[in-house]
Length: 352
Image 1 (cartoon, rainbow, N blue to C red):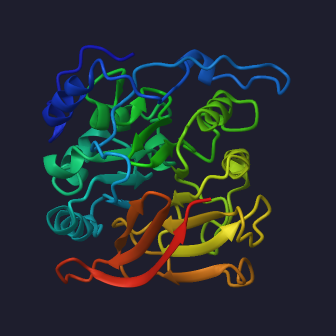
Image 2 (tube, rainbow, N blue to C red; image 1 turned 90 degrees about the horizontal axis):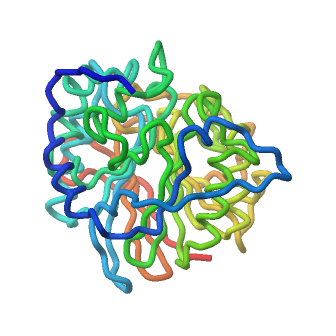
């Protein structure tokens, strides 16, 4: 681990350290594995030992039976991006809807996950203390770009300089889980399409996920990671590399999957392992790459046309989810400059 750094802590870092201190001694059901084990891909027939550990606490304590509101988006901050517009929308939601969590869906800082750039771009917008305190991120490919193969800048900003663990999970791993209300959340690290940290069947991340879902104990499950398994975006297309993660979630009858990567918004009907409509036990997924980066206007309408419920690439914005016991509602809020945003798409469903 790098030592001897003297740069100042990011905006909100002391808030997060105090938050982590309060959580000390509280046992979470979140689990991970040692970093050395995560670098290996275990043979399919070999059992991977999954070690429990004290994880980051949930962003907000929510009692079972209560409905709460979260927001999510990815592809956020950078020079000349619109992340300040979406940050303003998040602050509106915090004031009006008592926002309980912000899930950041990767590519948090452009053009790469440089700690100094986080201080310039992310910190004054999505990283103000009131938002950072309820943020639980996952990394994307840009956190691992151009010499940042270990995503050190990402972990330094969200966890604290050289901290081994924090709101972004364990340094070097970046996958974790937590509970809020009647919901179980699983944050996964698909990095550079799973080339920097494996996510294939039998990998430490995949084995951890299967075990985590097995003991989750909640009816409703939401997973989030950067690369969408299925989508219509014409820039990146589907991500078959994350199929083992999607399949494990499907087998466990999870409910929602959120991703970014393509800079637009897409809402898809519940899908099975092959991307076919499955209203009974399929995974409902959203692409929310609208956190501030330049939007991608084109869609490939020759794929997934029968399961596309809504899409837009005109406005940045965030997905708002109202999560209750056994059911949920969703709205995409376009950051048009209006207070609270403009609801462009909406829907509701029950947990599996």
